[in-house]
Structures are given as structure tokens and as C-alpha cells.
Figure (cartoon, rainbow, N blue to C red):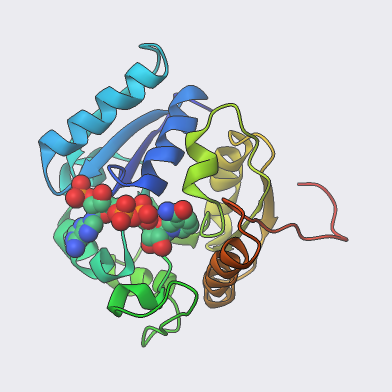
Length: 227
Ligand SMILES: NC(=O)c1ccc[n+]([C@@H]2O[C@H](COP(=O)([O-])OP(=O)(O)OC[C@H]3O[C@@H](n4cnc5c(N)ncnc54)[C@H](OP(=O)(O)O)[C@@H]3O)[C@@H](O)[C@H]2O)c1
């Protein structure tokens, strides 16, 4: 139920986390923007409040403090920053929390093109995240194929399915958060292992954006019932 839980968005000062936080606060969720620097987090929270005409409950915190207060932790940082971010917060996690990772291991993180992937030793960024948080944290991945630009424009529907991989008991919670994004649809993507497939679709979509000169392409899975 919106408002009854706290969502921390680590890296919510950046494009993707900011867009998700904006949509969730608009829907009535309580959101904490996480950052390495408290002032940056507070500024992003202020900007979201202003964008929503002063409505909503959103505050800024340093990343570890945001994790300590949250029921759901969303990781929205570049792949090159994911391990450091999670290691910094490791002592703040507790059993039963949900970690939703949307990191994509694009080759641009190591100076290559954003249309190609790098493969982390675990197979995907999400599986790397699972290795970096204490046992008992429920890890899922989602939102890797949703465009930040679409999220930021509140007049725009999100023309994209959201594939959720990982802990089954966390999926209904993430499905609720997907329902706050008009036009987006929840799709059960199976085990966390499948995140490697979902993450690589993002590189494909970036290629579509370039070749078709569009701001943001998305995906739709056909032949399955509506979620
Ligand atoms: N942008 C999109 O359209 C999009 C779409 C789908 C998926 N994604 C994925 O979502 C994730 C976030 O994307 P984004 O575009 O929002 O990224 P971003 O704007 O480049 O960075 C997000 C935040 O991460 C933190 N950060 C950046 N570099 C860091 C470093 N070296 N060490 C620690 N923290 C660092 C910063 O927060 P502080 O400085 O405040 O700590 C920054 O505001 C990425 O994995 C991306 O692949 C993005």
C-alpha cells in the first residue's frame, strides 16, 4: 500500500533514480533519495517536491542512512559505482529488506560503447549485487529497460514492460511499484540469473534509439496475460 513503506533510491540524484522517485512520490510512496553527499540528496528531494507542486513525502540522505531507514532499496548507479555503493551500505542492510537492482553493465562503464555489454564475473550486475548484500536481503532486478527520459516527463506514459527477476516473495511489492508507472506492465522474469538477459536488452534498446533516431525505445512481451 502506497505510503506505508519507505523506498530508498541510491543514486536518486541521477537520471534514472530521479525519474523513478518522481513517479513513486507522485503516487503517494514515501521515498528517500540516497547519495554519497547528503546535500546532493536533499537538493534532488527538493527538486522533486517542487516538480510535484509541494506534494509528497520525499527526503534526502547519505546512502547508508537511506538504506537503514528503508523497506525497499533501489540501486540506481552506474555499474562502475555499484560495488562501492553497496559495500559502503553493507552494515545498514537488515534481513527481510528488498533490494531492487537496476544496474546495467554497459561497456560505457569501461570506456566502450553503451550499445555493448561487459559481463561481470557473476554473470550480471544484479547477481553481483546479490553477492554484496547480507544473506536474508531479498534481491530482485527490474526497470533496466525503462528510459529515464520517459520517467521524467509526467505527461508521458511508460511504453515498456518491466521484467522482474529474483526473489519470488519480493515480486508482488515491485509489481505495486510498477503499477505506479502509467503504461508500464509487470512481467515475471523468473530467477535472478535471467537478469543477464534483461540487462543486455538495454544495450539493444540504446542501439535502436541511435539507429531509429528516437528518444527512447522500449519492450513489450506478447502472448502472456496482463499482470
Ligand atoms: N539513464 C537511463 O535512461 C537508464 C535506463 C535504464 C537503466 N539505467 C541504469 O540505471 C543506472 C543509473 O543510471 P543513471 O543514468 O541514473 O546514472 P548516473 O546519472 O550517471 O548516476 C546516478 C548516480 O550514481 C552516483 N554515482 C555516479 N558515479 C558514481 C561513482 N563513481 N561512485 C559512486 N556513485 C556514483 C551519483 O550519485 P551521487 O553523486 O549523488 O552519489 C549519480 O547521481 C545505471 O546502471 C544505468 O545503466 C539507466
